Image (tube, rainbow, N blue to C red; front, side, top):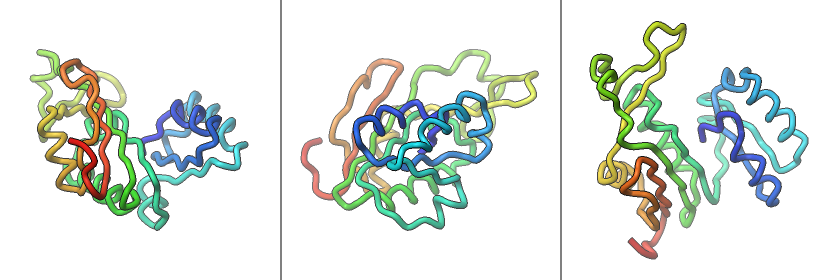
Length: 173
């Protein structure tokens, strides 16, 4: 989910894993994403769904989902909740969710650009971006609310946070 320029898609396809990439249609207009899309679309294991329309209408279940650096750039809390609610429904009962985000990236300049529960960046540019940090406990609580329990944590104390969540019975915590 949040496939971006498809940089995680190609290695998964090369490993023989079926991949469904979910992203806004406009994101595939960027040159790097467009070039990558042309490559991956030649692989029969690749499927593309546009957010939100295609993905919300689709009813397939998935054994695993990647949610890498996505939630912290979604400006509206309701939209972040929709993403998690939808993934909760689509990831199979014993499925996995790999989540990554950054923490400790808010700069003093950001504080003057507070909006909702985060910050906008890129003042003076044609397009701005939104950024919101989630601490480790907040992340785990948020995932638990949608039926995901933590299986493994990496880099909790650094600026990169990587967590593997599962659905179904708790194997480890």
